[in-house]
Image (cartoon, rainbow over all chains, first blue to last red; front, side):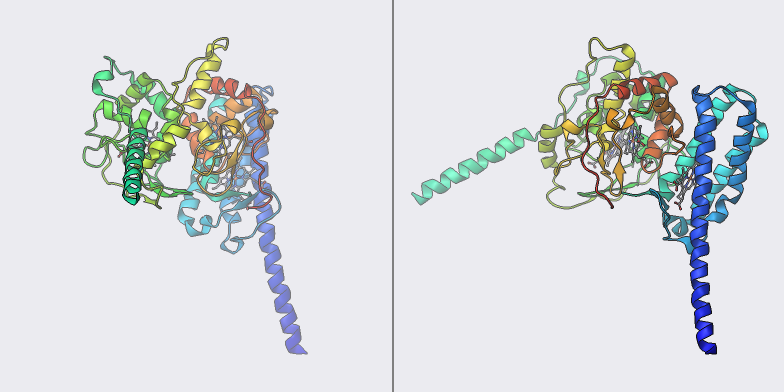
Length: 150
Length: 305
């Protein structure tokens, strides 16, 4: 009886661990989508001239990007290799095969966001210069480490 | 009777071979065919950037797009190509090449030894570019740092490894006409059409290909399986981009950001590194041209892959 209890607990714990890992995958996808919304929907839209320049919205979007950048590196633990969530994207196994290179992408992106955030964007021209620089950091990492289905 | 027949057969084979030889003859641009020209380095840099030479020829896994030492492996249905060194290094790169040899390579896809290059080098698109753009590009590449080291040999299976056969491919799939401005369209539209169709070689990825690796002309720009292996390249006619504005397209080519808050990945990310170096005018011109493309239905995309 005791033994069975232990086995059941172990199985539950095992499942628990998988749930936790799946959670990390969902978390990083949510964080990435937030990045997309902030840089594309807010900053990019203003830089393109689709939305009027709005200082408060600019500050909030950059603060959110900087906050998400802080945890980005921790959202790709080894035990999530091969796990997928719904949607058209997944993380490439290359992340864990070339971890040092992936980490250097995280570092380079974080540095770029922190620089923008420290300098502070005060007008449309500064915004127009900053967004593509950040945007290329995003696609520079997706080029190798994000997989698209189909 | 038997003997006569075999003589006839021999004649047919020889004649057939002569026709094959004639059909597959490489085209060479002679130095004497190049008029006097003072290179414009800034135009050469633009031509180099839109041509995307760095995407394939820059040394992989390092950020400097001007180190053209080659070495990137390109996986295709025909085998693996190892991109050569085109830095100005005299021993391993093109430092010893004449201008006419460079022009022949990029516009005609023919080597200094007179052999055809494989179309993994997208000269079928470059072929339609302006001679002056290619000459300026040569002058610009000459100013970049020499890098030593040669790439390994290609790993291509028979019969695709026979360079002479590429002559047939060129006859079938390489448009002979140089790019001509379309009357009635604005200079901006024509500039965009020129960049997209020649040096930009956008159709090379954004079109389906037939079994011989030729672009399916009726579905040009309508997307298809990724020629470099996994995944799907999206349709960029108005079938798919109808809800993108000109600004959206131009901004995507500058920043890699999609209008819906996504960001480019895959091989497009390296194209963005090239297009982001262009002038805003050139990006807008390309957007104007893309917005004018009639909607074309692409090949059916498999449900899962």
